Length: 380
Image 1 (cartoon, rainbow, N blue to C red):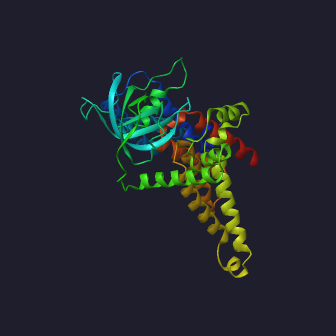
Image 2: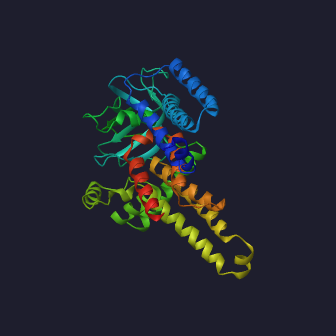
Image 3: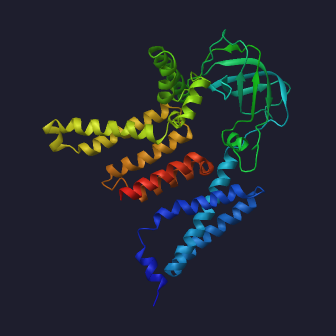
């Protein structure tokens, strides 16, 4: 006779990989609803989930499993809601033309191959600070050779700004949602010269790392002039400002454009090389190899190298996700656990979804975890 409880008991230890799936269902549910839940709705959902979790101990095994799934779905919904509210920032509600002042926090290129500046500490004419976007992004057109934009500089310009737009077709890419989670309140362009208003006086760690990135990028491009240097700088520091449209089109045509996104391939190659080089290098020294846990030392060195690469590459979502997955594996090595398992992949997915629930809807999250699950399953 079939016994559902016995089936559940036999599956103990194999159910954890379903945790991020249930969490993702809750996150997807939040992004699919057409109205924004109020704080009262979120409070009721929180109390209900906690009550179910407390009652689960007194229920049979099958019911406990069902309750755990419901609680995880509720947690995913709450995580997405909290994240959406935590990044709330003013968004421009009209088309603006006039003077713009702000501090450069990032320099990259737009789809039209124009240099693009992301500014914070924004000041707009006749707009109160409460209504002024915390960040704006401006593409530079026209002759801009008189000024080389650098992170931390405060600049002034005259330009056009408009609110971030939504998808151009049903189910298409939603730039408006991406801009919301980046606190990007307006995008636009300028055809007038950008003027330096004040040199960088910031001493924050983030800006210091960004300036270091740009110096490394400039050094790479000076050592390797032309397209080769621009490509090397892009995969080393994440700085794509030197990439021209022809190169990007060639990469897309050859299905190699994904190499520009610093993600699992780059992070895996770097940490794998550092791990192997450290471990096998120490193995050549008998006194060290016999007395020290060289495998763990290699894992620790690879973890440090991965964290440094995360910082120097700009720390975008793809790189962050790749680092979390690699870090989970390396920490498993340090804890004397199996590194390559579905549980490790599930743990990495839980961490990514907890930190950035919005990544669930991005192709990067879906493709990377789908590929990793397939590889780990075949490996197992």
